[in-house]
Length: 189
Image 1 (cartoon, rainbow, N blue to C red):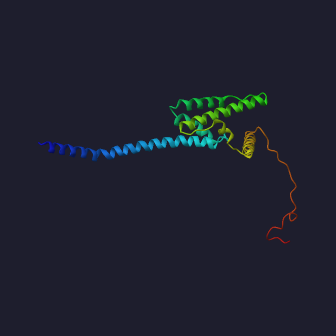
Image 2 (cartoon, rainbow, N blue to C red):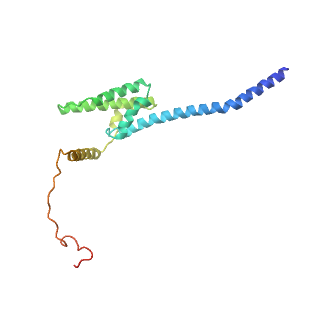
Image 3 (cartoon, rainbow, N blue to C red):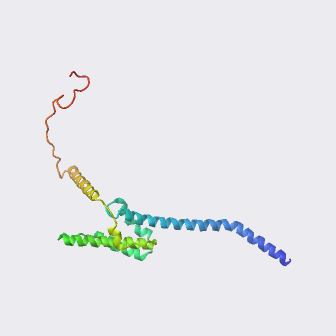
């Protein structure tokens, strides 16, 4: 066999290998990219939810996003350390003393949350200012009042259903027919 024939056979063999393995390799590379993009999308979604709900920390979405941090940011020690510090503080019972102690406790909680969001953002390539994370968030006071009212009503309803509280009932005079309302249809006026 001549060198030309050997080179032709070698070229033919490499071409066949490329024809059969090329699409497989391309699919694997594409799939790997898709998996990485999905992983980044989920991490970004966690950060987005926490940013969106940072003034309503009792919302279902906020708590759910917090609970996903260990899974989605597995292996990032800076994020997980900030997460542990924040969660640890959430489990602490607030002070029952002066308003200054309660304010300091809430301030510590907000600082730890700011540290967590800062680390999440840093992991994803965002550069947040920790102070601005807290200063530039907005939550209308009406939301808090509505939340408190719903919580109070729910608690009262549970107490009534459990028999711990009675439901006050009062008798009111029955209105005289025709006095406040027009006569019902089919009756003489």
